[in-house]
Amino acid sequence: MPGVSRTNRCDGCKRRKIKCDENWPTCGGCARAKTTCSGPPNPHTFVTHSPSNQAAEGTPEPSGITNRHGSLVLLQSQRLHGSDSCIGTFCLYSSTSSLGGNLTTSADRIAARLAAMLTHDAPHDMMFQAGYLKYLPARLSSSPALRDAVALMCSAYANFQRGLPTNQVLNPTIYGKALRSLGRALDNRTCVTAETVAATTIMERVEILFDAGRPFHRARHARGIDTLTRQRGPPKLDDEFDVQLALENHATLICQWTVDGGDNFFLRSPWKEFVDRAAVSAVGVSEKRKDVYAIGRYYVFWPSLLQDFKRLNSERDEPTRMAQAERLGRIVSALDVDVRAKGDCLLEKAYKLGSIKQRADPKTPIGARYDIACLDSLQLLVSYAMWAVICNRMIHHLRMVQGLAPSPSPDKDHRNFCRQIWMCIPYIQELGGTTSILFVAPLYLSYEGATEELEKQYLFDYITEVTRKRGRLMENLQNLERLVLNTARAMAAREELAH
Image 1 (cartoon, one colour):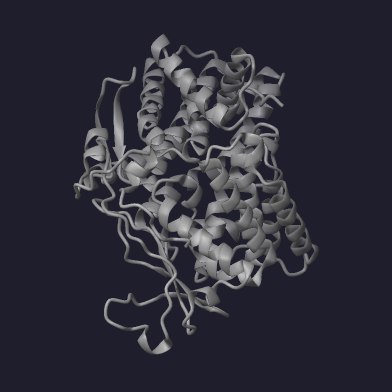
Image 2: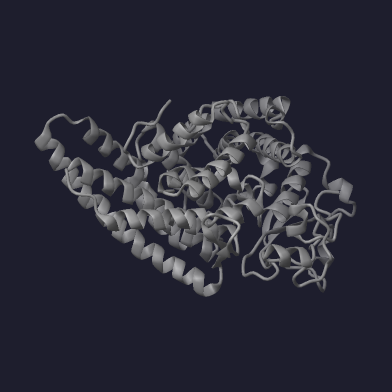
């Protein structure tokens, strides 16, 4: 039955596929791995209650959305054992007495599968961290496009976890059905719903993670998200689902525009005001997630900076080129100062809360690693370090354009921020799943910061491992290294991205 735990192992032992001695609060396996133990499993599943006994003793008060079979709700108070991180647990409250009667439609069965994955995998897999996902189970019956996109996501993730060959992860029958359903939903361009945008968003995530045949750096469905988001406009701040969907797509669209260009409407009203307000006051978003959004807001300037640098790099008139370099230097330096003040403050808070801890690690050439309490803290740390590296390399490039002597301070800062990214690698490796795939771009960016051969080999071996897992490993590893270096330089506007 979906959602029912078949083992008493903690999450860490299940991921590492070892026996758990169940010596909680910290089992032997997690103690030896020096990771936070999740404790005993909490075997929630879909349960039935008549309307008269929903408030019975021991039954949580539901808060969710009602569909035609009952209420599929998120219980807000579940916490990870040994951590202050919240995860979602789902139950289906229904007026029927038979569980089988609740899952008569394909939408209900897919909702059950998604809810089970959210409960089991959300704490350790980035694929299920998107805030809007918890609202989807109760919405599948109203949108065939969303239902079939979620079915594809669940199928692909399960195949990926089972270790199927890359070319078998995406089931062509399920993929084709999802594409056709999305196409029918898009035919009605006069009334684009949030569910249609969510379906397109899920298709883009599936494409990024599991489609080994797509071009590097590109996702076809990202263009669809751009068109639909522009057409619908910013959501109302009291619509939790729509707001969190828009905030998650903020990052997707920024990445799309950095690669292919485009009109960055987040810099203009009314989108600018929406992002500024929603990132700090969105309902249903944890404080740690808001910290991630606070750093993510700086990335809105990335696409336009890349375009400005492109014009600078192609400028042949020397006085004009120098004037452009001076202007860009002021802009990037101001952003660098601002993000460091914000990022240092947020990281200091995370250190005090124990969400991020540093310790020695002789197993890696870096000599140290981070122990991180949850994925939001990981994303905060990496997002901050990545943006700091981008600003640093842009400033370095501008100094070269202006003929200024190299400064030791920026080079030292560059290495320190790259090192912060590298210290996350052991934690990301422990998580497994899709997290390593979604965090490969910061590793590309930081590759130039490796000045010692052992560091460089450590990073390249890990990048090679992730690339092999994605089914995109090149026969000539020198070509892979060239791709990594080109991507790193393109992210900081020092080269054109190779196509």
